[in-house]
Amino acid sequence: MLSHSEARRKVVEVVSGLLREAAARTERLDLRAAHGRVLAGEVRADRDYPPFDRATRDGFAVRAADCASIPATLQIIGEIRAGDTFARAVASGQCAQVMTGAAVPAGADAVVMIEHTRPSQAQAVVEKRVERGQNIVARASEAKAGQALLAPGTRLGYAEMAIAAQVGQSQVEVTQRPRVAVLSTGDEVVELGERPGPFQIRNSNNVSLAAQVELAGGEAVPLGNAPDRIEELRARIQRGLEEDVLVLSGGVSMGKYDFVETVLHELGAECVFDAVAIRPGRPAVFGLCRGKPVFGLPGNPVSTMVTFELLVAPALDLLSGAAARPLPLLKARLAKAVRQKTALTHFLPAQITWAGGEAAVEELPWQGSGDIVALAAANCFLVVHASRLEMTAGEWADVLPRRGVL
Image (tube, one colour):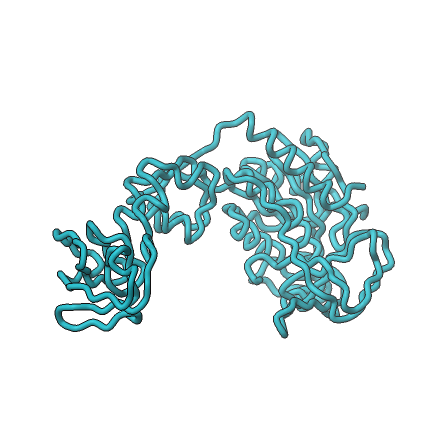
């Protein structure tokens, strides 16, 4: 049985192999609609940045040599606001008042902060020495014209979008989001608008998986729920295989009516693994069917959520045109001791806090992998590794944030 890190590597390896055989599908989007998408082309600087020597403080543009001995009295030849054009050059014995963000005039090589001067209407007395280049960002020090600023495969966050906007790229070429069919299974599951019987449950997995797909950069295609009947399950799975990825929940354990693996085998699926050494989520299945990645996740909701983050999310990174992001583990001190018996890696609903400036994590009381109430109160999972099942209060532990919450 694979560890979660080995299983994750297998997913990355298999999906990367698929991508080498197929050209990426791209589309052109308005920049404002491209947040979270992955670039398919480069973004280059259209000019130098900054395009002029830029003042970083309100003050006076001076020649540093004029301020070698202080106090130094300089003639004010004008005022420059951000965006102004100023035709005059600063000669020896002169200065110009500048505002933050304004262009430093020719002849000046430093800006002295206004707090270090005594200005009058015609003169400024400089009371502190300045060095050449002080309080100036030099032209082209951030980027040169034509320089590649964002490479293909870059995910567009707010900073990356600001770069594209700065260089005038109002539209960007991005990789299309992978379409992910989401299918739950089980006779005990009813849809949201239905009244469940005394021993039935509503289909929360279809909702939570669709949300996880969207958070991970995919486009969810909900297919509802398939009952535990092979013919109907086969029809729903075949529909799911029309999309880029199929994610199923339920029907992958060893029960009498767990038919997912049976149907996938009949449809020619190649199984890569069918169990992962974790709790919750041990009976997780990954394989290929008709050239499409297929994930069979356990039906209990917390198991479904954990295995999606560990196994499905890196596949969606790759299919979105980006590199697979590493599992974002944080470190925090245990608020209380933890003890697990089974030699698996455990992902326990927990709360991480930063009281006193240091991260602390505490496992929340929960009733097992069906307890969504406990998980909704958690902002992370406390990771208890199989190699260290007992840990004492105060030890550093690994923490997996809940995507979209922490």
